[in-house]
Image (cartoon, rainbow, N blue to C red; front, top):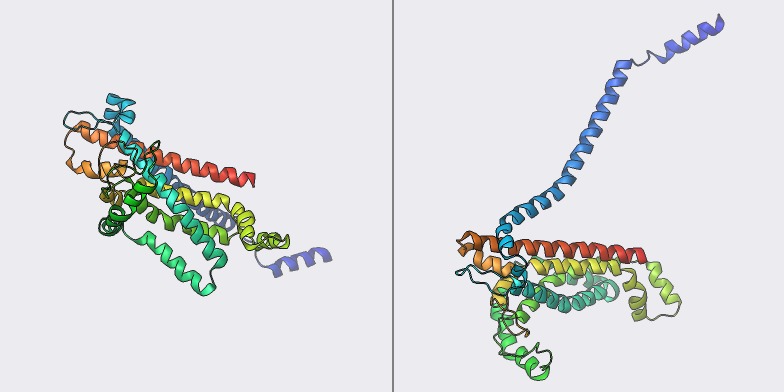
Length: 331
């Protein structure tokens, strides 16, 4: 009897027990909130691949008539005659690849040098202003680069750089620097693309180098390495995957650039071995002719060029992901 009375007194002191209905509503509300949050996040994440797929479908459907009519010859032919209804995108594909590779060839060493200086050698008071100035290059509009190229870069190339390269580096077997110095050329487009790609490569590389652990540098110094050997053998190999990602980001920027390249490349639909000759890129071809295209076949051919550019860009990004994954796995 005493134990029963003590248990009843304890229950009364603890207060009334929570009802099952109140506890159930709390749990139900929490579960509903979790599900809504999960569905919302999943939906937002699914929008990106769905949008990419819709772009591929829309451009592919518009490009299908030209691709079906010309087949593989659309990629291998140099004949582009809207009046006769003949379309071949080989010069534009060639110009896109050559100008982008030339841009990377020039921009990558410069960007890597800037990143190494800012992360390893620059004093603290100089690091932020220089980094800000380099990053500011990415904020300059493309048309401004084009105007600067027309009034500054092309005269310098035509009067000084091209004659020098033609007279000193002309090779009979590989005539990269032969022919008349027009100014508007593949070389001009590649150089302006190098300037435009540099801030992207430099920014990514700088952040990757700053993320290298201090112990990595100290271990190399403890083994007797010089400062240059530390950077060459310890820091850069450790950050290799990030550097590759930055270079591929710059390549993607170069492949899709339109206005500045259109203003400087010369817009001639032919394949030339010399970098002094005018050329075409896929983006500049679309920009030049889309507003004037009246026939359905002409529009479809331009959409086919855009579809090829989309595939190339997608392949480059996939290759970048694969290279980063490979280097990260090997490390």
